[in-house]
Image (cartoon, rainbow, N blue to C red; front, side):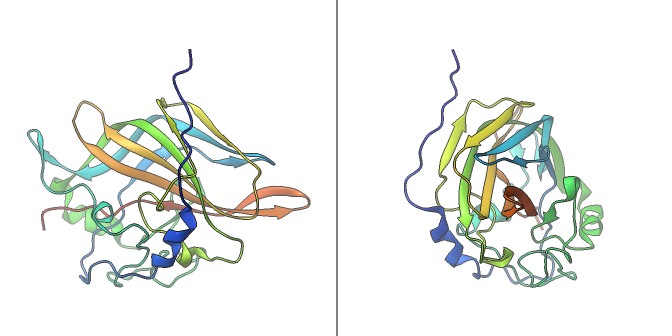
Length: 236
């Protein structure tokens, strides 16, 4: 018997987009968004988003001292839902810092990195002892429509759940292909995965990908795609 199920969410995810201009911290030493490997390339059809999950998903978080985290896992998880911008620091070029999709750093599968900056690896080199890559389980995958066709990337919610999810699937396994069946329209959609560190009692929050679905030649395709992760949070 398949124990997974979709849970309908109440309310609209679009309401969170109005908060996208709020500020998040003022330091010029803001940590970068965490690295993760959760989603393989997402596909789109006339009536579904098709989301293959990685066979061995993983995500960064603050390193642990014994069973205790050195610091909270991610700054973004402490911020109000919908926060999409931070004060510029260290040559910010990613979404939320005034630059376009083309100007943002791009990671795996061609996804632009939310709040990504050109010198993120330098920051990691200076904080190696404070961050760790964890193998993760995925208790849930969820979906939401987060913007219309006239919205741009800076109108979208920040890291974490976008106010409310439109659908949620539980008991998801690594390597599984998850589908959200619905009548798609042009606009922005978010797929998110709730992450739990394996062999540790640590909820690592949500990893997400934002997708701009457009119609071309009578078919839907994905135009822009953004990887949306909370910022790492270390002890200094």
